[in-house]
Length: 380
Image 1 (cartoon, rainbow, N blue to C red):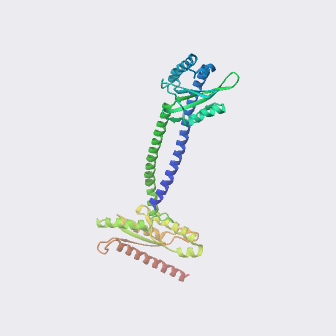
Image 2: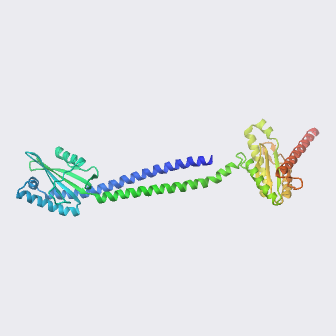
Image 3: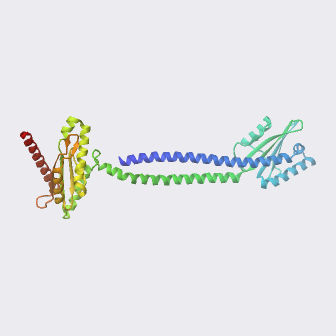
């Protein structure tokens, strides 16, 4: 029962901790990602403004030409790329022109000075097409993973003095460093969170197991009605006392039987009977004191086990109990039959024999009390 309950408690705790950790990690992940993206967008916005201010409409119109005018336009753009590749992390810049023959695509790369034309694909090409057809500024919704690394894109339409669109300028920004750092941070955070969850779970399990041990042990050996120890605890104490007897120690057993419990149950009800029994047990425990623990070994039967000086202690306890007349419940006074026996190696084979002699003495006392009561009734 204990292990099953602890397991259930641990599973509930583990799921709760996991859910909280996952929620916190998700929030931190989203916040970190948004912070990274905002930083990228701010840098991209500054570079875009710089390029938009430094590329003229005439250069955009001429950049695809094979003429000297086109060469000068491309040289100017390449100069900006050389500069921005260091401070702005631009990987690619491409310009889509609109002329009478349709679209003319020109690309320039900060990574390569070859004449090979770089063509964006996938989501990048879709964003470029949207900016061209819808004539709106399109910024990347996220970091894109391409063959040349992680990039962030921005595309914006260019219009002439007549507000007619003449093309689209697109840029790919190198965000490999930021993206890789973020991924490493996320991975390390996840690993650290997982390790902490495992460590916390182990500590929690061991702590629960240790913390609940006294409770379960107490619950197993405690009588829930009176709060004193139960029959199981008494049997364990007898086994321990048996080893003490074998080593020559003195052991005394005392048996107590509460009188009038049936009368209280029949006349006042079992709830009052429980109170009557609890109050009687408290008085018994007061008379026993530190001599030994009180055990409830049956419905209305109690016992205690005394060690050294048990015989003298038992006489003291019996004397006090026989003289006790305190009220226990309403008009019910304390009344209890008791008996005691000390282990004698000459007549006892084991403590069971001692228990039998103490029980026999208790019943003799009970008969004596009954006889005295009957005599008193006859005199009245």
